[in-house]
Image 1: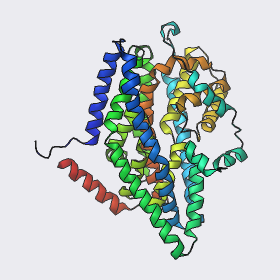
Image 2: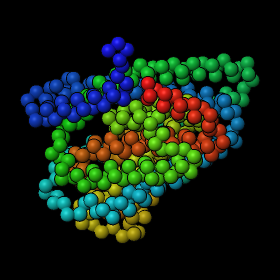
Image 3: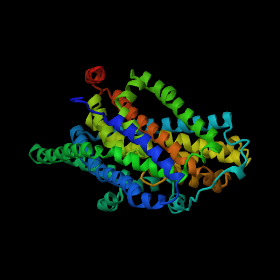
Image 4: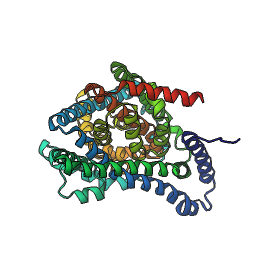
Length: 433
């Protein structure tokens, strides 16, 4: 049919289904599986993740500097920052409490025969765990961790919080210059930002290939057999995530005269991509672009989204709290109310600022379980189904961060309602066509 075009969302969905089918076939055909995965599938998936990592830092730096230079008021920026951190802390704490409550009510780890569970080697996470456990958690050290001793080293390592700190200071310094010195540099960063968004659209054309390869490798490695003994845990995590998205975040959205279903419709492509790849990084640039188009100012969007990437991981903290209680139940450990309060407080601290660490939820759990006497070895039992749950919690992280932008914009009375209505109308028109 002339002019027929498959949307990105459908391309990714088709790639996801094909990846599951190919992965299942490979899992049952061990001959040649390792060769195919090593030489074709794993590199194809890694290429996509690397392409995304390549563009995230330039986008964050350029958009933040342009946004902050546009604000030009340190007091106003400080107010936005305080409101953002308060909002993040409240929402992630609610996520932890909801997770622990649901795990206690539904008891997903009770009655499971541990001898029927397969284990997976989790030693790859131990080095990163040691870094977190050895990290001092005092206020002074937390502040010091925000300030890069070498900004180029922070950029090379992809350390988001130091990058944000430097970019904010640079933007404030730039905004204080006379117009003849400020404007040319602002134009350079604005052009850089717009160019990087164009590069993002180019990279997204490769997204279906990356999704196909990533999911195929996962299914080929673990298959579906490892899922059944832990089905109760997986189902509870998915139910908890849906409950949090539609009830908790839905209530927050309604309080701000927004609709969570409309936000999900706007982010349809990004949610499918984040779900398929289990990576928030893959959609970070597109969330910033869409929230700005929906009516949030650049100054708020460019600050809240990257900060939320480190501080507002609703899905991850919800999962971590459920997984911690699940492992305790698996070993028959009855946690007291005091233990659960310690668990909440520990998760609040350890889950902040380490989004760039591979296997972040596992790393946080390894660093947390010991605080209440839960055996760390229990994580080896759920590692095989972690990717299945990671997909859902990543999608919730995306929704939570996008909503945070709109909430802060509303809180600051900077949300453009007319622009949002125009965007919604355009979206409905496209769907009708």
